[in-house]
Image 1 (cartoon, each protein chain N blue to C red):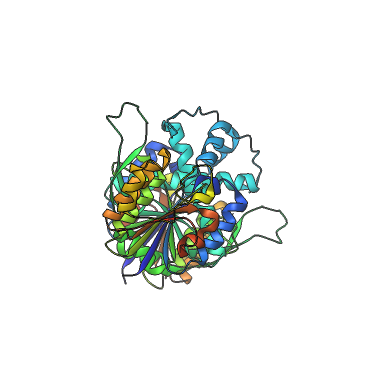
Image 2: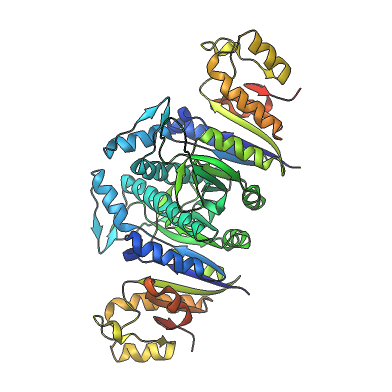
Length: 261
Length: 261
């Protein structure tokens, strides 16, 4: 099977034109097939402010009312997605930008039953791997905006980390998938404030030890649990680290690799 | 060769939620492959007003400064494109929404040398028919937003009528293409104010006669010249009429058909 990189780009890079351009040049240079998953939260927040649409965040999650859904659809699937595609094309990377509604690629349902009403937020039901495969057979990469749909005409705002994970899992039947989460830190750290304490490799055995010793800071636990869930669903490797050193993440010179025993 | 419909939807339908939904149900019911080209001018104008971005129109054409380019990218390639896709999916029409930057589908250059500086407006250089063919082999239709790119990272605002025409021409080598322009009138009229005077069929011979007799109103001449240019480039038929009766346009019960001698 061919290798496929599913790469989630962090908000700190999306929101900075210079960092984004540098990242996209590194991304374009990666050999092989790849899917780039992006958000764009800060730009959406800024546009909402300009349009006087109040934004409510609960536990770091955006409440997506109908006006906010318009904003994120415009910003994620329109402005950010198409500007990334145009920049990748300029770097000789033949990119196609889509969201989860396109080709019925990612079917979701509006979240219900939660203690908080998050509005038009989608939880994923299924990812159609063949849609992505068809594009990747002709083009170099897919740029994926975190908007899904419910199959009944409703677009839904969906967490980009989750989209990256579910897409990586679904494509594991067709490719050897490596899932890369880029964020603001150098990887999984022993000391959350010290990038020098990055753990190079974690497998299920060492993860158990690290948890028992309580040396991984709490904020990383859900991310790591998700990473191991992805591994158990067929993903070959999960890498966590800084977008600024994307190529070193792929070679293993930087970041934390989450691997099988 | 398979039949392919390239359908340009007029602004009066895009801007009206009820008309748009009714149109999309008719569109979804068309058998065979199809491409839907849309604009969204009034929604873009409204968003620009809400953002206090002054809009300058010269001879009915929008001057696209950098802030306006952001607006049309968000509205056309984001909000309108993805909402159309979601509605088509709900009608069991497997649609994929893209703009001309995706897959390097439509390469353009910034218009230069004109007496008026239109800003970030693109004139089309080439359309990659194989990009559309690849999607249409797996899905039912492509929804195409009128944003192109220059291959150097710059998105460009491009006239949707021209996009429909150039896409139809390029795909004529792979499909039997019928190009449908829907607008606010019932077709090519002998009396611009009377929908009952629609001309059912025009071929090059009768077009010459109609022009000599000066019975076609002036505003239609550029549209008709473009239609005949499309025919000469391989398109089988051009149909002009009301979006509200899309299915009758296809059967020939309504609208004007522009055909070969």
